[in-house]
Amino acid sequence: MGGRASSEGDGVVTFELDPDTGAYLFACGHKGAGKSKFAEWYFRSYPYARLVIDSNSDVDPEGRFTEWIDPAIDLVAPASQGRPPVYRCPVPDLGAWAASRGGEPGYFPSWRYEPDFSNAHWRYVVDAVMGEPPTRRGAGSGFLGLGQPVAVWIDEIGEFDPVGQTPPKFAQVLHKGRHAGVTLIMSGPRPKGVDPLCLSQADLIAMFDTPHALDRERLAEHVPVSRTELDALLDNLEEHGYLLFEGPPSRELSIMAPLPLERLEGREPRGEADSAMSFAGQDSEH
Image (cartoon, rainbow, N blue to C red; front, side, top):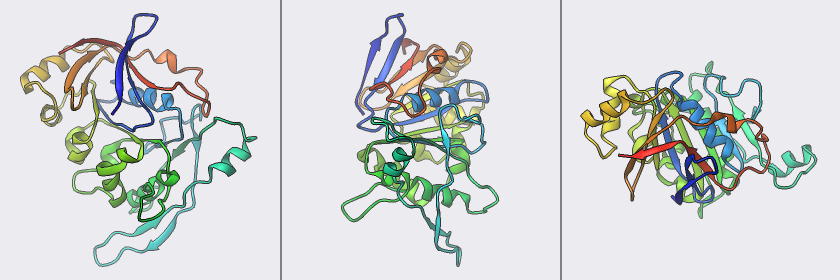
Protein backbone atom coordinates (compact mmCIF):
# COMPACT_ATOMS: atom_id res chain seq x y z
CA MET A 1 0.00 0.00 0.00
CA GLY A 2 1.59 3.27 -1.10
CA GLY A 3 0.62 6.23 1.04
CA ARG A 4 1.76 9.46 2.61
CA ALA A 5 0.48 12.14 4.96
CA SER A 6 0.26 15.73 3.77
CA SER A 7 -1.18 19.06 4.87
CA GLU A 8 -3.66 20.93 2.70
CA GLY A 9 -3.84 24.68 2.32
CA ASP A 10 -6.42 25.09 5.07
CA GLY A 11 -4.25 23.22 7.57
CA VAL A 12 -6.21 19.96 7.47
CA VAL A 13 -3.93 16.93 7.56
CA THR A 14 -4.76 14.24 5.00
CA PHE A 15 -3.65 10.70 4.35
CA GLU A 16 -3.25 9.94 0.66
CA LEU A 17 -3.14 6.54 -1.04
CA ASP A 18 -1.94 5.50 -4.47
CA PRO A 19 -4.99 4.27 -6.45
CA ASP A 20 -2.81 2.24 -8.82
CA THR A 21 -1.52 -0.16 -6.16
CA GLY A 22 -4.81 -1.12 -4.50
CA ALA A 23 -5.74 -0.89 -0.82
CA TYR A 24 -8.33 -2.43 1.50
CA LEU A 25 -10.37 -0.30 3.89
CA PHE A 26 -12.77 -1.29 6.65
CA ALA A 27 -15.07 1.26 8.32
CA CYS A 28 -17.41 0.54 11.23
CA GLY A 29 -19.68 2.42 13.59
CA HIS A 30 -23.34 2.75 14.54
CA LYS A 31 -25.89 4.28 12.19
CA GLY A 32 -25.18 7.96 11.62
CA ALA A 33 -21.70 7.86 13.14
CA GLY A 34 -19.99 8.58 9.83
CA LYS A 35 -18.75 5.24 8.47
CA SER A 36 -20.74 5.44 5.23
CA LYS A 37 -19.59 9.00 4.58
CA PHE A 38 -16.01 7.86 5.13
CA ALA A 39 -16.54 5.14 2.52
CA GLU A 40 -18.25 7.60 0.19
CA TRP A 41 -15.33 10.01 0.56
CA TYR A 42 -12.87 7.37 -0.58
CA PHE A 43 -15.17 6.01 -3.29
CA ARG A 44 -15.84 9.40 -4.87
CA SER A 45 -12.17 10.32 -4.70
CA TYR A 46 -11.15 7.21 -6.64
CA PRO A 47 -10.09 8.26 -10.17
CA TYR A 48 -10.80 5.03 -12.10
CA ALA A 49 -13.75 2.66 -12.65
CA ARG A 50 -15.75 2.03 -9.48
CA LEU A 51 -18.70 -0.05 -8.30
CA VAL A 52 -20.75 0.14 -5.10
CA ILE A 53 -22.79 -2.81 -3.82
CA ASP A 54 -25.70 -0.95 -2.26
CA SER A 55 -27.51 -3.46 -0.06
CA ASN A 56 -29.99 -0.98 1.44
CA SER A 57 -30.51 1.12 -1.71
CA ASP A 58 -29.56 4.23 0.26
CA VAL A 59 -25.99 5.02 -0.80
CA ASP A 60 -26.97 7.24 -3.71
CA PRO A 61 -30.74 6.97 -4.33
CA GLU A 62 -30.82 10.11 -6.48
CA GLY A 63 -27.92 8.99 -8.67
CA ARG A 64 -25.73 11.99 -7.88
CA PHE A 65 -22.43 10.13 -8.26
CA THR A 66 -23.41 6.64 -9.46
CA GLU A 67 -25.38 4.97 -12.23
CA TRP A 68 -27.67 2.06 -11.39
CA ILE A 69 -26.81 -1.08 -13.35
CA ASP A 70 -28.63 -4.35 -14.03
CA PRO A 71 -25.98 -6.63 -15.56
CA ALA A 72 -26.65 -9.89 -17.36
CA ILE A 73 -26.00 -12.79 -14.99
CA ASP A 74 -25.88 -16.42 -16.10
CA LEU A 75 -26.69 -19.38 -13.89
CA VAL A 76 -23.85 -21.78 -14.69
CA ALA A 77 -24.83 -24.51 -12.23
CA PRO A 78 -27.87 -24.64 -9.93
CA ALA A 79 -27.62 -25.39 -6.23
CA SER A 80 -27.50 -29.11 -5.51
CA GLN A 81 -26.61 -31.50 -2.70
CA GLY A 82 -25.83 -28.70 -0.28
CA ARG A 83 -23.64 -26.84 -2.75
CA PRO A 84 -24.47 -23.23 -3.63
CA PRO A 85 -25.28 -22.21 -7.21
CA VAL A 86 -22.63 -20.91 -9.56
CA TYR A 87 -23.28 -17.65 -11.37
CA ARG A 88 -21.19 -15.81 -13.92
CA CYS A 89 -21.32 -12.22 -15.08
CA PRO A 90 -19.51 -11.03 -18.24
CA VAL A 91 -16.80 -8.40 -18.11
CA PRO A 92 -18.33 -4.95 -18.79
CA ASP A 93 -17.66 -3.39 -22.18
CA LEU A 94 -16.18 -0.03 -21.23
CA GLY A 95 -15.80 0.91 -24.89
CA ALA A 96 -19.53 0.59 -25.45
CA TRP A 97 -20.23 2.43 -22.22
CA ALA A 98 -17.98 5.34 -23.23
CA ALA A 99 -19.46 5.44 -26.74
CA SER A 100 -22.97 5.73 -25.30
CA ARG A 101 -21.81 8.88 -23.54
CA GLY A 102 -20.12 10.50 -26.49
CA GLY A 103 -16.79 8.78 -26.02
CA GLU A 104 -15.42 11.46 -23.73
CA PRO A 105 -11.76 10.68 -22.96
CA GLY A 106 -10.53 10.14 -19.43
CA TYR A 107 -13.93 9.17 -18.07
CA PHE A 108 -14.60 6.03 -16.04
CA PRO A 109 -17.88 4.48 -14.89
CA SER A 110 -19.23 4.89 -11.37
CA TRP A 111 -21.81 2.13 -11.05
CA ARG A 112 -24.28 1.07 -8.36
CA TYR A 113 -25.65 -2.45 -8.02
CA GLU A 114 -28.56 -3.23 -5.70
CA PRO A 115 -28.93 -6.91 -4.71
CA ASP A 116 -32.18 -8.78 -5.30
CA PHE A 117 -33.01 -10.21 -1.88
CA SER A 118 -35.88 -12.25 -3.31
CA ASN A 119 -33.20 -14.66 -4.51
CA ALA A 120 -32.17 -16.84 -1.57
CA HIS A 121 -28.71 -17.09 -3.10
CA TRP A 122 -28.26 -13.33 -3.60
CA ARG A 123 -24.75 -13.35 -2.10
CA TYR A 124 -23.55 -15.56 -4.93
CA VAL A 125 -25.16 -13.27 -7.49
CA VAL A 126 -23.34 -10.28 -5.98
CA ASP A 127 -20.17 -12.38 -5.95
CA ALA A 128 -20.57 -12.90 -9.71
CA VAL A 129 -21.27 -9.21 -10.39
CA MET A 130 -18.01 -8.28 -8.67
CA GLY A 131 -16.30 -11.21 -10.34
CA GLU A 132 -12.60 -11.94 -10.32
CA PRO A 133 -9.48 -10.37 -11.88
CA PRO A 134 -7.84 -12.06 -14.88
CA THR A 135 -4.89 -14.34 -14.12
CA ARG A 136 -2.27 -16.22 -16.09
CA ARG A 137 -4.66 -19.14 -16.12
CA GLY A 138 -7.44 -17.29 -17.88
CA ALA A 139 -9.70 -14.29 -18.30
CA GLY A 140 -11.51 -12.77 -15.39
CA SER A 141 -15.22 -12.12 -14.99
CA GLY A 142 -17.55 -9.42 -13.80
CA PHE A 143 -16.38 -5.96 -12.81
CA LEU A 144 -12.99 -7.07 -11.53
CA GLY A 145 -12.38 -8.79 -14.85
CA LEU A 146 -11.62 -5.41 -16.42
CA GLY A 147 -7.97 -6.14 -15.69
CA GLN A 148 -7.15 -2.62 -14.50
CA PRO A 149 -7.22 -0.75 -11.20
CA VAL A 150 -10.81 -0.58 -9.93
CA ALA A 151 -12.58 0.21 -6.68
CA VAL A 152 -15.43 -1.77 -5.10
CA TRP A 153 -17.38 -0.45 -2.13
CA ILE A 154 -19.48 -3.03 -0.28
CA ASP A 155 -21.93 -1.24 1.95
CA GLU A 156 -23.29 -3.36 4.83
CA ILE A 157 -20.40 -5.81 4.54
CA GLY A 158 -21.84 -7.91 7.38
CA GLU A 159 -24.86 -8.84 5.27
CA PHE A 160 -22.75 -9.90 2.30
CA ASP A 161 -19.87 -11.59 4.14
CA PRO A 162 -20.94 -12.87 7.57
CA VAL A 163 -18.67 -15.22 9.49
CA GLY A 164 -18.40 -18.58 7.75
CA GLN A 165 -20.36 -17.57 4.63
CA THR A 166 -17.78 -15.88 2.40
CA PRO A 167 -18.71 -16.34 -1.29
CA PRO A 168 -15.92 -18.07 -3.29
CA LYS A 169 -14.86 -15.25 -5.63
CA PHE A 170 -14.82 -12.72 -2.81
CA ALA A 171 -12.66 -15.06 -0.74
CA GLN A 172 -10.07 -14.92 -3.51
CA VAL A 173 -10.36 -11.13 -3.69
CA LEU A 174 -9.68 -10.84 0.05
CA HIS A 175 -6.54 -12.93 -0.35
CA LYS A 176 -5.19 -11.74 -3.71
CA GLY A 177 -7.19 -8.83 -5.15
CA ARG A 178 -4.80 -6.16 -3.93
CA HIS A 179 -2.11 -7.58 -6.24
CA ALA A 180 -4.43 -6.94 -9.20
CA GLY A 181 -4.86 -3.27 -8.27
CA VAL A 182 -8.23 -3.73 -6.55
CA THR A 183 -9.23 -1.11 -3.99
CA LEU A 184 -11.80 -2.62 -1.65
CA ILE A 185 -13.94 -0.48 0.66
CA MET A 186 -16.00 -2.30 3.29
CA SER A 187 -18.43 -0.57 5.65
CA GLY A 188 -20.87 -1.82 8.26
CA PRO A 189 -22.01 -1.34 11.86
CA ARG A 190 -20.88 -4.60 13.50
CA PRO A 191 -17.31 -5.88 12.97
CA LYS A 192 -17.98 -8.85 15.27
CA GLY A 193 -20.23 -10.59 12.74
CA VAL A 194 -18.05 -10.03 9.69
CA ASP A 195 -15.64 -12.64 8.33
CA PRO A 196 -12.35 -12.03 10.21
CA LEU A 197 -10.39 -11.73 6.93
CA CYS A 198 -12.13 -8.42 6.20
CA LEU A 199 -10.36 -6.89 9.19
CA SER A 200 -7.09 -8.79 9.08
CA GLN A 201 -6.57 -7.93 5.40
CA ALA A 202 -7.47 -4.25 5.77
CA ASP A 203 -4.73 -1.66 5.20
CA LEU A 204 -6.80 0.96 6.99
CA ILE A 205 -9.45 0.46 9.67
CA ALA A 206 -11.68 3.45 10.44
CA MET A 207 -13.42 3.11 13.80
CA PHE A 208 -16.31 5.48 14.37
CA ASP A 209 -18.49 5.33 17.49
CA THR A 210 -18.84 1.57 18.00
CA PRO A 211 -20.68 1.02 21.29
CA HIS A 212 -21.10 -2.76 21.51
CA ALA A 213 -18.59 -4.56 23.73
CA LEU A 214 -18.21 -7.56 21.39
CA ASP A 215 -17.42 -5.27 18.46
CA ARG A 216 -14.78 -3.45 20.48
CA GLU A 217 -13.28 -6.77 21.49
CA ARG A 218 -12.90 -7.72 17.83
CA LEU A 219 -11.35 -4.35 16.95
CA ALA A 220 -8.90 -4.59 19.85
CA GLU A 221 -7.46 -7.72 18.25
CA HIS A 222 -6.17 -5.61 15.35
CA VAL A 223 -4.87 -2.38 16.90
CA PRO A 224 -1.69 -1.69 18.95
CA VAL A 225 -3.49 -0.62 22.14
CA SER A 226 -5.21 -2.50 24.94
CA ARG A 227 -8.95 -2.97 25.10
CA THR A 228 -9.09 -0.50 27.98
CA GLU A 229 -7.21 2.12 25.97
CA LEU A 230 -9.40 1.51 22.93
CA ASP A 231 -12.53 1.98 25.04
CA ALA A 232 -11.23 5.31 26.31
CA LEU A 233 -10.37 6.51 22.81
CA LEU A 234 -13.73 5.53 21.34
CA ASP A 235 -15.67 6.96 24.28
CA ASN A 236 -14.01 10.36 23.84
CA LEU A 237 -14.41 10.79 20.08
CA GLU A 238 -16.03 14.03 18.98
CA GLU A 239 -19.23 13.69 16.95
CA HIS A 240 -18.42 12.04 13.59
CA GLY A 241 -14.76 11.79 14.58
CA TYR A 242 -13.00 8.43 14.33
CA LEU A 243 -9.88 6.39 14.96
CA LEU A 244 -7.80 5.40 11.93
CA PHE A 245 -5.50 2.41 12.16
CA GLU A 246 -2.88 1.97 9.46
CA GLY A 247 -1.73 -1.61 9.07
CA PRO A 248 1.83 -2.90 8.61
CA PRO A 249 4.48 -1.74 8.42
CA SER A 250 3.64 1.41 10.42
CA ARG A 251 0.81 0.04 12.64
CA GLU A 252 -0.11 3.57 13.71
CA LEU A 253 -3.38 4.52 15.37
CA SER A 254 -4.50 8.13 14.85
CA ILE A 255 -7.35 10.20 16.24
CA MET A 256 -9.18 11.83 13.32
CA ALA A 257 -11.48 14.84 13.20
CA PRO A 258 -14.73 14.66 11.21
CA LEU A 259 -14.38 14.53 7.43
CA PRO A 260 -14.98 17.82 5.58
CA LEU A 261 -17.89 16.35 3.63
CA GLU A 262 -18.56 19.60 1.79
CA ARG A 263 -15.51 18.77 -0.32
CA LEU A 264 -17.41 15.89 -1.84
CA GLU A 265 -19.94 18.20 -3.42
CA GLY A 266 -19.32 19.15 -7.02
CA ARG A 267 -17.30 16.07 -7.95
CA GLU A 268 -18.29 14.78 -11.36
CA PRO A 269 -19.80 11.27 -11.25
CA ARG A 270 -17.57 9.93 -14.02
CA GLY A 271 -15.05 12.72 -14.35
CA GLU A 272 -11.32 12.71 -13.89
CA ALA A 273 -10.94 12.73 -10.13
CA ASP A 274 -7.91 13.67 -8.10
CA SER A 275 -4.82 11.55 -8.62
CA ALA A 276 -4.91 10.32 -5.01
CA MET A 277 -7.50 9.58 -2.36
CA SER A 278 -7.43 11.54 0.87
CA PHE A 279 -8.54 10.97 4.44
CA ALA A 280 -8.92 14.34 6.08
CA GLY A 281 -8.94 15.58 9.64
CA GLN A 282 -6.02 13.88 11.38
CA ASP A 283 -5.50 15.35 14.85
CA SER A 284 -2.84 13.27 16.49
CA GLU A 285 -1.20 9.88 16.63
CA HIS A 286 -1.62 7.54 19.59
